[in-house]
Amino acid sequence: MDHTAHDHSHHHGNVPEWSQLTFTDLWTPWMIVLLILIFVAYLLFTGAWRHKLSKDAPEFSNWRKWMFGLGLLLIYFSSGSPLAILGHDYMFSAHMMQQSLLYLAVPPLILMGLPTWWFEPLAKKRAVVIAFKIIQHPLFALLNFNVFFSFYHIPHIFDAMTANHTYHYLYHFWLQFCAIQMWLQIISPIPSLDRLRPLQKIGYIFANGVLLTPACALIIFADSVLYETYANTPVVFEIFSKLDDQQLGGVIMKLMQEAVYGLALGIIFYRWFYRERAKDRAESSTSSQTSS
Image (cartoon, rainbow, N blue to C red; front, side):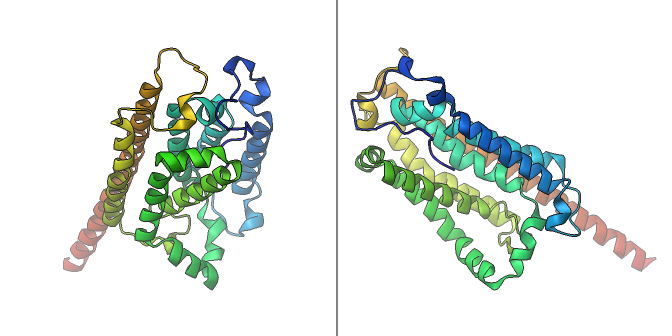
């Protein structure tokens, strides 16, 4: 999931005025085509062609297909729409919106949309199990994403990264991997390798929220513009000062994180509650049968 499809030279001072950008710059048509092709292939392999992948593949629920489609839509919105250029060249708040979509919203949607029968055969391969054991170590996943994400937003590092295309792409590729790794603890497409119990998942999500807070707080409460990258870019919206834009970026990240983690907590708790109730019912019916 590429951070941005646009190849503007990002050395300070030569960012074009917003009005000079073309339709292709703003809307990345090739990306629309690519994502539509991916979605069509996905619909075929979860629908009409699913038996080519697995003989006894069950019907795949529509809401999961919607989740996957929504995930692809958010990839486009964050990496192929005007938001991508805004975030890359003009506004820190747009950059944070993009980041929170790519790392907090896209991975759980895509993971929820993956059928387990695509992956179950892999779970029988020893190398995959070992790789998953390493990747899915909760502490490793927890620290990996939050440390690299916070590190990236240290001003000197951020400015150095955005000034160099190769580093920028590589770092975002790595952050995307870390984000998927972080979400794999909560939503695993391979049920047999899903390690955390519901209460542990709830604790894990809380820990994630705590670890991301210092980076957001640093940005929200800074009293000067931290990032050289955005200090001298052309103004797109007159209403914001550069400092307001920076604070808004921190707030967006924090709110998105609260919303997404809150939703995840709600779903885990709800499922856990109903599973326990079903278990209790089953136990009470068997005990009443044995007593009669």
